[in-house]
Image (cartoon, rainbow, N blue to C red; front, side):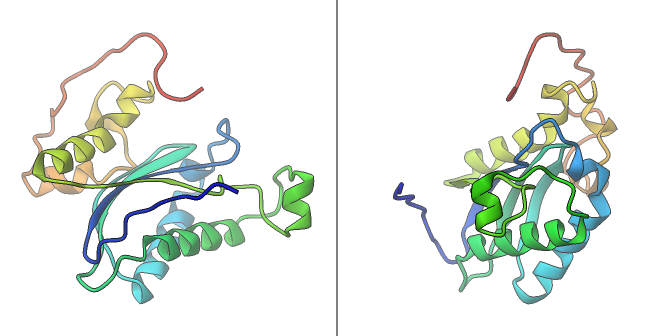
Length: 176
């Protein structure tokens, strides 16, 4: 079994990528209110700040800051993923291993996390969240993607509404 090494810094700030198991699904965008509810319910007992988030049909990116005495992002993601999965009807295909372990077939088991190191790293990862729907060809302007904290940051004056311009991109980007 792989030995995953994660950095745990109380009060730290992390960038995350969380993927659906079936990358051709659109469960996250289709059930956005369910996902928001799972996050809100988790934040009640395990608070964290959402510095940035973008939810695409099959994956999401987020930048979180945890409370000063807490470094347990794994529990938070486990709860969010579990709550989301339990709220959906059991319609997904299951591998023999997932059936044996009584698991759902909605999420990839693990997630990608990156400890934010400094202000420049923070800015890069916030911008990566916001440009992601454009990168994946879902919209041509950042402001046109509805499932993003970009709109909150735009209202706060952090980003102008035309940030990143109008990018009519061609080619293949991101994961297959």
